[in-house]
Image (cartoon, rainbow, N blue to C red; front, side, top):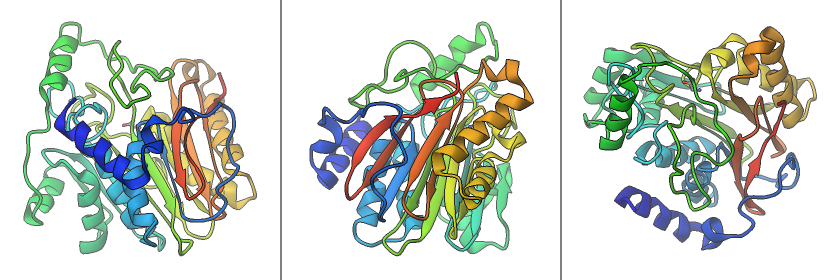
Length: 343
Ligand code: GLY
């Protein structure tokens, strides 16, 4: 086990006892969302590995901390995890071998910050937060984002791990660009360990939380599509696409093929549908149906998953394909769910 994996397993265990990682009930029965946990605080995040991130977010929330602080601390866990090849350190590089990271963050006051195609910085989410808090802007990209990060004390690091470099060199043999669908439990097994059998893709972590003061916050961070074209940016750092937070209504985040999420401004759409009275799950389903309507044939071969939380602490998710999981942590539950899907 790697030291970073060990470290966050230990930290997760310290927060909420062995139940977090060893519970038989960790993988709850499928198709069961939008119930329980109607009181704040609560944190939800994409994928089963989100449970490790939720554990660190929960440390903030259980002390009455702000949702914004919780989501930043939470997604940092995934960013630092070298075994997670789709977020932060250890992320799979672009087709030229550069690890380029995208992230955004949003608070309860419509403040938001984003970095796109940022290299050499392990925690792009914290740079995004600094863009939000220390500049008059919302987005910094590429070299400008790096320059800003270095000027503000972030350390320049090599983010390309041996195993991601090996995967890239293997990919170079055919250099075939083909998004791979996430299939059930392929990326992480129940203990958080890597499953064999191929390269993961699109396992962005999106996290939204409702704190004890009934305020929402959200964060989304990814290394994007594996072996993408140099300069490609997906939905994750695009406010309204990969993430949206409206403190009156709710918050939503997305994972999967970012181009499809951007085309329908997915997360903003879902928040607006919740404003019209839809439950989080119904709103996420409607987002998925929009993607299908635009291109039914294409939608059969790609994955997109949406995850949403409303002001009442109700949550829900929906995906194009089977296999999208999400993690929930509140005072009353700690579970990983399989989202319903269209196909
Ligand atoms: N959803 C992540 C990406 O497409 O980059």
